[in-house]
Length: 379
Ligand code: GMT
Image 1: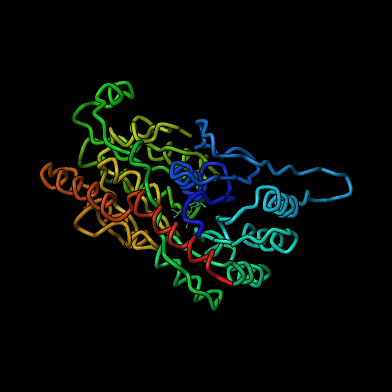
Image 2: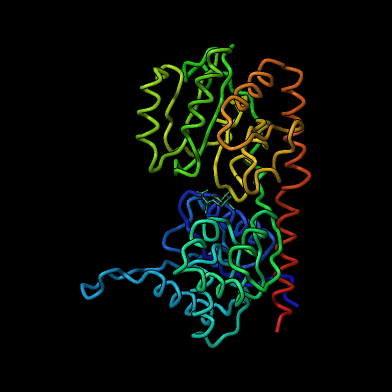
């Protein structure tokens, strides 16, 4: 009934992070298909850098009244959601994260007059970190069970959610995707030179928000070993709580000349285009969007056998899988791949092909649209 011209609300954490990227890119794709998109967030999502006539932004304002010890962001969000549901006559509200966003959406649905369907996407941290917290378990479970349709970004996350929260709800796997108009490999020898990287040096890259779960120290330890055997530079992109620890470790290991701290960067495809290998050695990772982005740019990855990573890397075909913390294995696999140009080319092409076949934006968009239709049919 509503296949064309739906009014869709989207709530996510709009700052840098996989879930914010997926939510924003999905909003853009839906808008291109003619749907009206209403972002209900605390600030304009960072990937929303163009004007789209059918994308609207509703800012959640938090008032800092002196009577409140903590400003009630979640309640302000729920209030804003209810307002937008009624004013815009939303068909769907798609929230990213069960906690707090699905819970806010349910409250908003109770408040609003206009009836809306709630679609919730689980990205990981809400389940694998918050789900462990007993005080939040019931709330997260409620958010999931009261949503009309629930998706998760990997099979692994579906299993974890069912085990940890014992939810009685179908959870559909809808993988992360890449915006192929931006993520492709382009030759840029000049950029490599500008970073002071010699032509013969291999470029290893790690991009994250430097949280403990990303195990950036393992990236440094692996790089230290790799560098002893082949000329290489490590690009570290991003910032976060572990940044100074990592900086310290690089100094202690005497790797300053070979590790480039680039901080937060916007043009990630250009950086991937000069890279030969992506390392993602996390201890928790529900999917690993950054791995997908690297692969789309022809950069094979070495990742840990954790969470959703084995659903992205096909071991020995488009990258390698290693056990968590097995630095020696990372090193030997990296050396083998980086010192064999034919194999590297095969892996690089396989990575691009795998992203294209399994995680292309059109396919994922259609999966979401089918689930929106399902949500609209629920009573
Ligand atoms: O990994 C993070 O710290 C950020 C987090 C987020 O909420 O953006 O990423 C999660 O969602 C991404 C998009 O679905 C996934 O690709 C990441 O694997 C997932 N992170 C974790 O599970 C730790």
